[in-house]
Image 1 (cartoon, rainbow over the protein chains, first blue to last red):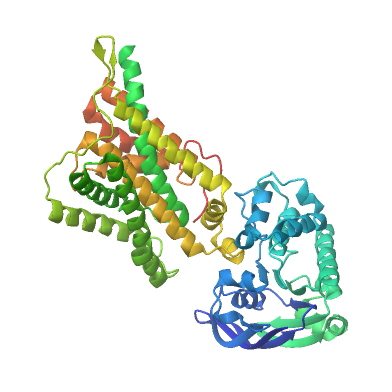
Image 2 (cartoon, helix red, strand yellow):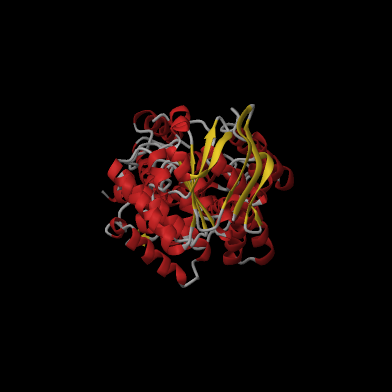
Length: 235
Length: 298
């Protein structure tokens, strides 16, 4: 279980995240939704040490996430795919995948994990030798997720995987996430502005606004709450 | 014709040394986004260390080896003890991009001052691996010596080693990822600061080799490698600062070009030519002669 208690993060004088607490049960998919600037990205960045918290705590299993250097996260089963299709453009698709398992490159399971990722995203298999900057936006997002999966994470933190992608591609990616969770028991925290799509596949949801939690609970309940939708999600 | 060919082989030998220095500058730039002006000071220090080793052992291989190892260790220490703490302190503030460069300029002065204090300011000769006398072709001596051959050969080995490490090894992949997308690399588990220090060590070793190879012809003094720094930097800029291959190509182009200038215009033109090339490239093609991609924002 991912357990976040009283998490507060400041960017200089701006409070980006204020007293955020929620739990993510193991094996569930939790959507963190909210408008631009709600603190969603800061939340994930704080969990993997890319942003420094002012106070609060966050634990994955027995691991204290906030005291861990960023590069340790993946060694404790926490993978973070940051916003903006985070691939290394200068490297090939194959090298980007290899990068994901560099820290455990002697483990024979790496090859299996790689094959599985390529089954999940077959378009990557056709483009292994290409440089990542020749990929389409959707393919880059798939590559970023595949690279994270090769580390065999138990907790996957995804930051706006749908950003700037065509609806059909978003659908593909969301379906892949759904399948992953069902087949592997992976715990997923999905940060999204695309609330409709995220709520469809999520079990739980956390609605953030201006750094604070407005409400949290069952994804179906939040999706059906017309007032919440009008006020915070704009549809 | 004979003179033209002589000029070219001579230029290739010099160019290979500029390439090494360019590699050193590029390795540091790519890993840390710092232009390391102290590279000349580091190389001069390791060359003096080499001179001492030679005085004690009279063994050239040992001299070269220890100079390179010292250069690598010293390069790593510069990053660990100075650059990393400085960057940590300035964080992302407005002086973040300029402070490390000022630091390396200061370090250059400090190292040259230190070297002057310990070994004095007079020019000293430095041993070469093989005879620096030109080969004899028939009755005439050409200005290409066994030592020039050694220079070409040893820089080639270093370049092949770097190429292998960067393109084929896990460390090289980590270094490339850390250079281009440090955050992605970190999230993938790469210990980015350690990888950066290794980059500084490689650069220190390459710079030390460049210093030891050029010093038999330039003689050794606290400031004797300043020109090498300028040429190395120019070569790096010619190659676009990002690409190791670009740096090597830039070094050879510059070496050949300057050799032609010396032969046909006179040696008093070299210094100016190098700077004119540097400025022209920056103005006309800031991404370098062979860098096809757009300039990345550091």
